[in-house]
Amino acid sequence: MTEPFKIAGIEIRPGERKCIELPAAQLYTQTPMNIQVRVIRGTKPGPCIFVTAAIHGDEINGVEIIRRLLELPAVRHIHGTLITVPVVNVYGFISLSRYLPDRRDLNRSFPGSPKGSLASRLAHILMNEIVTKCDCGIDLHTGAVHRPNLPQVRVNLNAEGSENLGKAFNVPVVLDSRLRDGSLREAASSLGIPVLVYEGGEALRFNELAARMGVRGIRRVMESLGMLHEPHTPKRKSILPVIAHSSIWTRAPKSGIVHPLKKLGDRVKEGEIMGLIVDPFGGPGGTPVKTEGDGIVIGRNNLPLVNEGDALFHIARFEKIEIVESQLEEFMSLKERPQAHD
Ligand SMILES: [Zn+2]
Image (cartoon, rainbow, N blue to C red; front, side, top):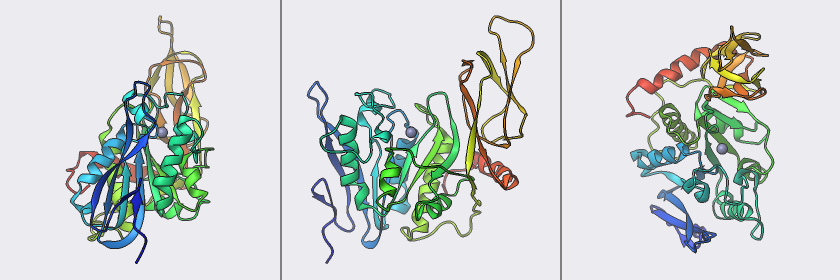
């Protein structure tokens, strides 16, 4: 008989679905704060996977992804265990902020410690109660405020198991990104637990394409791990994700008002004009914003007011760019189709 599976001291038996409250530091008004964890444990054994969202409190699209995921009939009877944490940074979530009240970035505070800062303590709770009990995980993020990202997956290809996880998620763009200090992904993979980061949409907004691709991606990862009873993919077309090993930012050559000429998912060529920066008080022409390399636009600034040096376009660079380009067309059209199979 295996050991009882517990989170915060509460046992979850095979076949049970539970909502568990992880106690976190209370507010200074003495209001208690909990991090809600939703767990589904199947009757049959299988892998244990976590899905986290809103580690950055204003990145709310992932919260919607988990909400939709938990409503899927397919996850009612799974092999193994699905642990979801829809809102990790509960403090930032209620104040519409990326950060914690102490202005720290939770995703730079892992693995944390029980005696450290608020951020460090939260990171420690998440590592101890969730991450270390899992075989792998998916961490949901979005771009910053006014900076939507094309749905994309970020993995560290040096970490074992990450590449398969990234490809199983099945979005056209997989970015091989080196680990950042103090991220959940870094802390988990240093323990041999691969984590993929899914990025789609922007902070404080829901993005339908990113939400649907997120739910679909998690479902596909669960399928690839043998957690779902009836795989739904064989008849459906899969895309072939292509890995980008580097990316570049195109920055504003001067301050002013930017009129972008490229959108998310567009293919661009070195030296191409991506937009024009004009003077808000009038004046002739505009200053062109040019790329410094070929690639696909995976992130874009949507705020027209820019200062010199501001990042305007994030461009992923691929060796097989034609494949990415053709698959993106198909991918972007998924938004228009009925939702039933996603
Ligand atoms: Zn984030």
